Image (tube, rainbow, N blue to C red; front, side):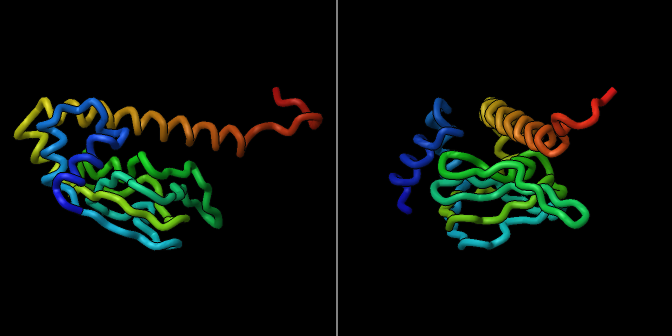
Amino acid sequence: MDRTKLLEVLRDHPFLQGMKAEHVAKMADLAQEVQIGKDQMIFRQGDESGLFYLILSGKVSLEATGPGRILRVQTVGAGEELGWSSALSEGGKNFQARVIEPVLALTFDGARLRQAFQEDPVFGYQFLQRLLRVVARRLQATRVQLLDLYAPVHGGSKLI
């Protein structure tokens, strides 16, 4: 993707909408385009993965794994993001991400993003504000899944 198209795509991505043009340009400098096929694992729960993704097309299942089961927490697609923990620090992933429809995305190296935040704190602040909204949505999605999973059965014995 040429730079002009990249800047346009970034400006239009919901995660970056309203961000200063100079900060969108910083994102363009850090971006790498990737394509990921159906059924590919982007990362597994606990993996150390340093990439943050802006999804341009396709769908990804975010899943929590436990003994003998996998729980889909959320499905993310075009206009959404993935790998938020990479922008905060190095460490294990909270979920696993599996492609359910082929994905076209822009990736950003977490260490390079954090360096850019240190060099330009206003950029870091704007980015992290957006990131916190993502984290809040993911926590809410997880909460809803847990409520569905552990909801009492109606008509059965009452819980005290």
